Image (cartoon, rainbow, N blue to C red; front, side, top):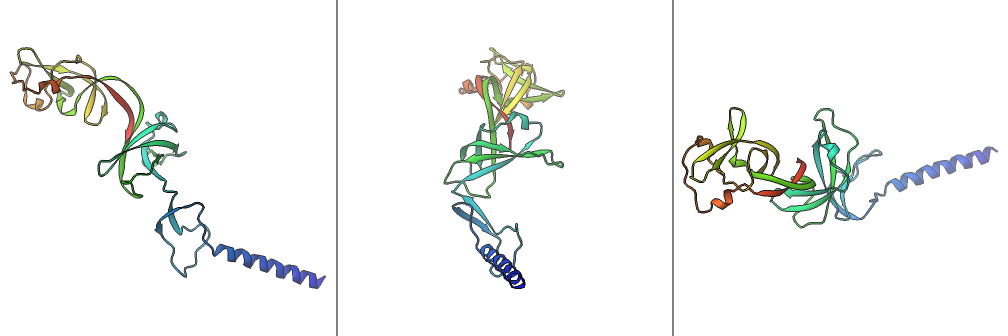
Length: 227
């Protein structure tokens, strides 16, 4: 019995050493490309210590911080338009939403899968828009808005080239354009820029490209957040 106990103890030691030997091999969970290394030769590391970071199968994702108020409007599978610092636009898809919100910033992470793209690299800065649907909307350039007495206004150009100050109610902002919820009719001519120097009733000179200064009815994508 004593000999059997010694054999069992020796076997247990052998098993433990064999397990430790297996732990000396660093195996990646999947194929991919190493993007960074924190391990050094000869270092002794504990369980759970990060050794490498890897881009799995060339897959990239964009991690966007979205405010808690916008989070309920975003769902897995929603399309996303991501723009890199170089101005390249890439279409992505929401993969998942983080289950928790940062108690300090009140933001949560949204993970967006991105397709392989020559201009994308891990660690790059990017901003994006979550596309939550489309609807017809009247929009004007951001530069056409004039703030007077705490309200937003747009100068409409009348048939006699005199401007009329129109108080408007704005809606969502999409890029450089702003939705006009009320106060302006589609198709009217407006002052696209420089309205801050005008007063109601001023006479203006209409330029040849004034058709570009009309307020069209556009299909504007509604976005939850730009990050």
